[in-house]
Image (cartoon, rainbow, N blue to C red; front, side):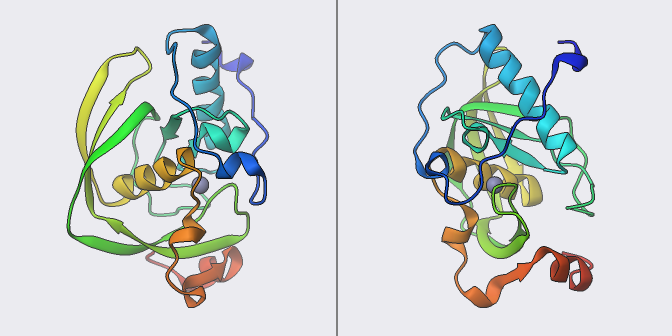
Length: 180
Ligand code: ZN
């Protein structure tokens, strides 16, 4: 895919019903439409300093998201990885061990919240070639996947914040949380 054809997509913000609708299965992964959507999502995450983005966030209500962890202006300490599309994913196992950590969301601008997530998960998904994968993910990448998986089910991280005391503005977060 020619990078010049990739677009930065408009991101739906909290209050838009597309963020509250369970998404439908992706049916034809190899189609040019789905392949271009994947490239546009990767491009949009990169241009907006996202470490992940789900299709419903760009008004496409299908079960597809990108995990694209790397250090950037919004997540200074994120690990580096190649952008990983996950299509029709299922989380088949969650560790009992949970950890609380800070999350933000392109659809909830200006806010951060502390959310409890399983430290380790096992995911079955299709890659962009349509091949089934089954892998275990831990720590920050496991957190991203659980956050994006929520999006394809119509849930946002604010729903999982246990107390409003666990919320912070983006500006205060950057000023106060050095090792978050
Ligand atoms: Zn999000």
